[in-house]
Length: 177
Image (cartoon, rainbow, N blue to C red):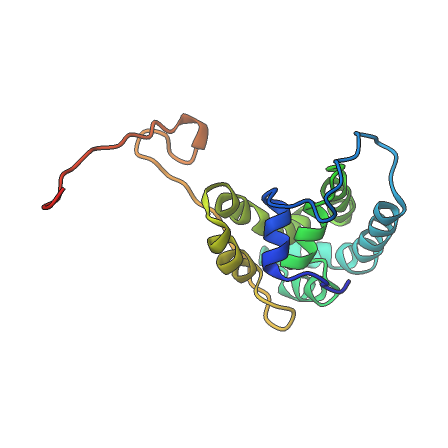
C-alpha cells in the first residue's frame, strides 16, 4: 500500500474538513466493495502467514512481538497511512474488517498491532488538526523503526475506569487578569 496523500490531507478528511471529492456520503450497506474484499484478503494473508505461526511463541514469551510489528509496518498494515485508509472508509466497515482478520490470526498480536489506535483516538478526540499532524504519525514511528503508543488514565476515586471519572476545574486568578 502506497501513501498518496499527505498527513495534512488525511487529517483534513478524517476531521470532516473535506470529503475528498465534494460528494455526498454513500448510504449504509453491509455489502463489501472490491477494495474492502481486497483489504480483507490482504490482512487475512498476513494473519495466516505471519501472525498465526508466531502466536504461540510470543504468547509463551509474554513479550511485545516486535518482529511481527516490523513485518506489519513493512507492508503498510501498521502505520499512520494504513490506519487513515482503514478509518476514512465512509461505510465504516474497513476498520472492523481489518481487526476481524488480524484478530483471527491471534488476539494478543492483533492488540499489539492495533493497540496504538487507542492513543491515537485520545489525540484525535482532544487534539487540534496541527496536533494530529504532529503527534499521530509519531505514535507509529516508521517502517524501519516502528513504535507503539499507549493511553493511560488514572484518577484517585476512579482508578483506570474512565467512565467513573468526575472531572472538575478550579478557577484561579493570575496577576493581570
